Length: 366
Image (cartoon, rainbow, N blue to C red):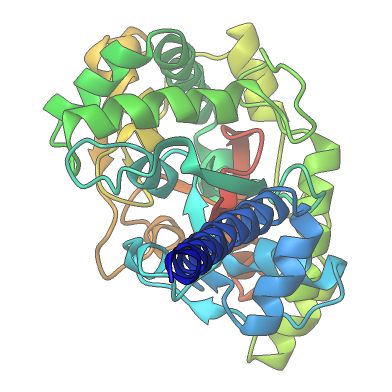
């Protein structure tokens, strides 16, 4: 009897041990699986991420001329050029409906990673796929005017460039002060975000598409511009047949003139023909355009005899149209926008290339 009780107790103990051991093994197995999945996810290559997201239809973009780089990237890795239309916030990225979300390094990416007002607080738990690294970068913010305006007011153009570039150089070397100047000029975002933007914008101006340092402000790098033009010809779709045909024949000489920039840097210009001028920005006041605000605040425009009115963007009239119809004298636009405008019959001229590399990335959760 005593022996049977002892054996029963031993059997019960063995059963409990087996059950406990099983639970522990299951928990360990689950943790191991989770760790393996995490390791696999973080070790994926950019190409693997792009292909996976494209097949799921979860590559996002705004589709306002920003999409050409994304389409070129998708084509490079053998995927359809279709993309998911993305809103101007990062909620789709946050809720997981967009796996690879478009972001400008100086704007949306800052909101994703930072914890200040409006931020999503992801910190370093996100990664990026950079258009520059994948050879599909297209140049963005430049200074342009109407070709006839430049021909009729060459001193004005040169003086404006001289002062604007001086403003950009100061802004890039004093980003916090530049951010404060923009903030006080009527910022559309918080002061913390302006500071972040200013530091990131400076990187786009002082580094080229291949990662080389740039000290030649406003430089129109022929290789980067040609790549932009080539990609524009491939991915810009115009409804008008005549415009589409013209797009196919455009050369760099049809969209830019380096002579005004060279003269401006050499100080080779006289009294401006027109002293009251305006520049149309592509968007609301923010550090994306800090060079112009700094030039105005520091009196650089005054020094060359110009009274400059900085006109905010975001209205019904685009910057290319505003310059073309004479509402403003100068404008800030992306090279692809200028290419589209000239293909459609406008006669605009790039006179300086401010951003030397693309600021567009795809952001993902690690």
